[in-house]
Length: 389
Image (cartoon, rainbow, N blue to C red; front, top):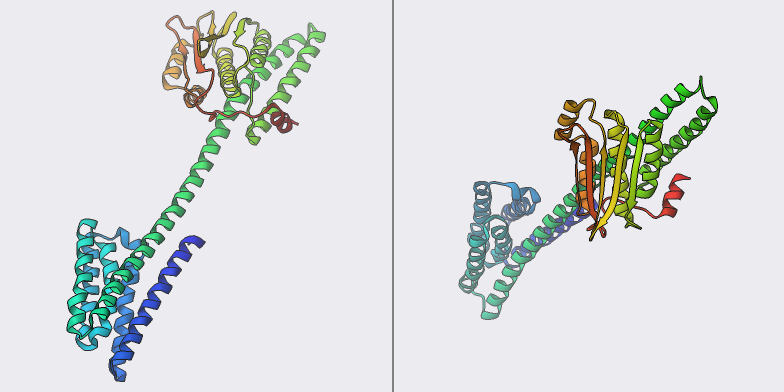
């Protein structure tokens, strides 16, 4: 058990031990007892407070109503039966009984029953020969004892619930971080690895016939590889700022390596870092899908501001070479597109992607100029540079 719940339970044990001792002292002070009777008295007190501690434990909240009533009935017997031998000295035991009533019975029954037990202390004290002041003291002490034990028990329950909730939140945070890492890794590396593969194939074709251009493409391939390494570092550090303009320029270069012309028009100005990052990620995913599945000659990319919304569209010009497979994949929703939908939903935007009836891949994403939240993630450029260094 953690320190805080353990401390709360320890306080209950100490409090019940003190009340137990007070009862034994009252009996010894007011009643002449023999050895056997004293032993019975102490044993009864210990048994009563053992029942009380069981009722005050957190596990008792999971008991069935029948079990709670049975245990409460046993405590009622242990509370009232010894009064035959110990008279008024045993009256303090009604305080713990009040607490047990509040802890075991439904509220609509518990509080009237609590009031009835406390009120019953008045005739009990009078019959035992107590004066008005002593009777008032017994009533107040009994009611207060019940409330103190009840309050300590409920407080311990709340501390345990708080501790359990914190553990669950910590586990959820770990799970969310794992999902973030896998999502970012897919979004960042899928594009870079596709570009590396394309450039590698291009270099392989150029080496025999145009070695100078092959050397230039090799240098570009190394740049993409270094960028992929930097992206991995960014993901592990939690810094994921990306620029839509930079990604558009990169997309033109990657598409050119695959002999695809790009018609790019990005006119959205300076965007909020979160919106910029999410749109750049969407562009990466769209280009990656086109390169993987289509025989494209022209790719059209638009990023325009419409009122308070920025809209990104990406369309290829030729039918998909595996339209049936792509259509079913779009209906299922690949992990990349699902990741993007999650990102756009978090900032109040949306995404539509898939293969049209003519077989062309189409992606449209929109987001507010000011995101509703920054859950998609973003970091200052300086932090990004430090993570990439």
